Length: 220
Image: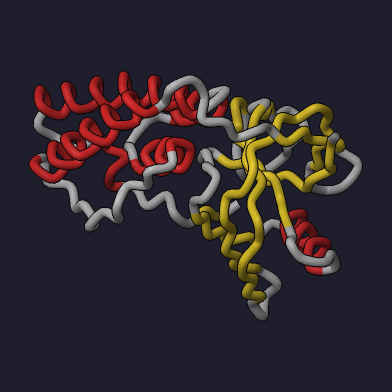
């Protein structure tokens, strides 16, 4: 079964359960918000990564990632000049089956993906928890400002998404984690990535540049 979602292409990967504020100023995305506000709740749009192209400007030559994340709109603040600030929360992953370019903004016929724990995720989850704590310690030692962490969840699916979102990784790695078939596979990939990043931090004794970029608020 598929559903048609309005799409918001970003240079950032959104994971289920994570909060993403957005600042919308292009006319096509103002229209997207107005269209959403005419729908009953829950109101959803699809956050999808950009593989080729830019967030601002023409989408004609833009290439999108195949897998994205539906985001539920939890707050809309309209400004007098027509811009919008909205707060979204990642919900379900989806795979784009077909693109619709008939509106000023993109829409996609999407198929939602199951969220499964996978085969015996427990040992890998324990390893990821340990590596994530060590990784955060290395970041702090390198001078990064680290917020006090919430308790890591027991559920392997939630754990995999929380750690994937919190780690400072490039877009390709983040997209690969989003596309992982189940939590066990995602946790296995995270184990390798966290070990790699921890080794780099120990060797370089510096914080990755991305640590200093505020990626929580995205103008379109």
